[in-house]
Image (cartoon, rainbow, N blue to C red; front, top):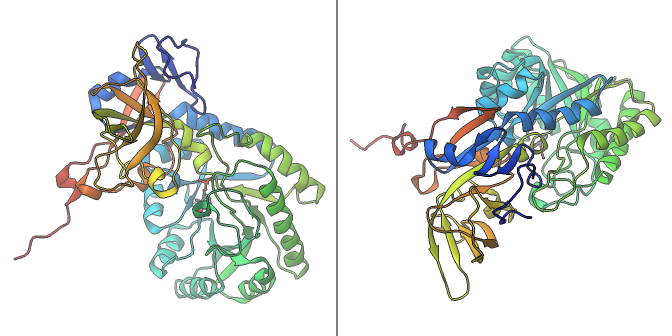
Length: 434
Ligand SMILES: *Cc1c(COP(=O)(O)O)cnc(C)c1O
């Protein structure tokens, strides 16, 4: 990456980060100067580009042009209300995994009929809440869940629309913690058991079978696992329908990767061109299609701005200590994930040093980047890239650190969509002993 060069041309877009480019006075997102935003709102602060989110969504929309398709944003990637509004206004549905996420969709004005509810551990109150809200579909993950859901629905005199998540047993070739479609995973039902479980679902009075779904993992950078999963799912659709159970929609889940560090995932439209080719060839091209993308819609639309607190030379390592930490950016600690780290205002000069970029949290796992060549001084600001997905939504208050502020950029405008948490916010609800 030519990011440490101080003379970056204004047209240079950073890899994997659309709507982000250097101009003469530093890094911009759309038409907003990030250094000025950091001065105004403090650091750490997450900044998201509305245009980048809509551009990512447009790739899916192009891929599905002319088809009966519904894009359900997997909101656990970033569930901030302002982000949800962008997708709700663009016509997206939502893939939720908890009653809390359901309330967020309601607060953001999303269409309940376009909500699908995934997750292996839905509770009865969550089922009731979702039935009352009138969601579009429950993506059921076990046979036992079918019985419970049917019971909850009957007690409410409702019929729950269901899809069963099948485990296609394909290897998405991603990190084991984000691989979900293999036999050893807790998700979905086994391919071999699916037909019998569909028969069971069809026999339950409180359920209406409407679809089938799968989701094989996350940060997938190849088309092959999707093509293999599609074949496996279509085999099941064939046998389930042959057993007299109509399948209205097929939901292929999410999981498409983004470019963090020289990753080259297929573009959503190119991927779907290939997948739809297979779907058409097998005669299922006119079925209603659903997808549940999360990361690929928001991951590269966001950055986290942070300030360098101290430079600490060491015998074996030099440390660049920043004011963002694993509680703000948990992916490196959790998955040893890579985020590019670039200066907000590049420094002139050549004294580049290799640092481990670390946060203030009292854990050795609190690192954000390892062995990064940076030209920095204390007080400089850095941008941690590809921070739109699975960062703020996974953020915690560990070390009683308030969660960062969030800003949504739209052209020349910058909207504060989440105020920085104060220490008092972090212990609101706690009670002193008498
Ligand atoms: C997390 C998740 C998604 C989204 O995955 P991404 O990799 O962010 O696209 C979709 N569907 C289900 C069921 C999920 O759990």
